Length: 81
Image (cartoon, rainbow, N blue to C red; front, side):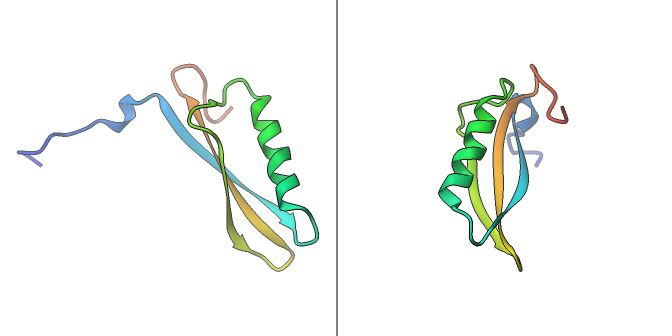
């Protein structure tokens, strides 16, 4: 560490947050993703670059769990809000 360059990653104001949502096995995953993307676009604090990302995280007993990643600029908005 003494001879290495230290990079402060908190200097980058873009911060990633995520949440998980379950989608029933009999529901359309593509429709669920569209609904999620459309909802995220309506929130002005969420950045369009990088683009929000939705991935299948796990398969539950009654639903597929989708993990939704999105980014905000912490200098302009609070992630907890």
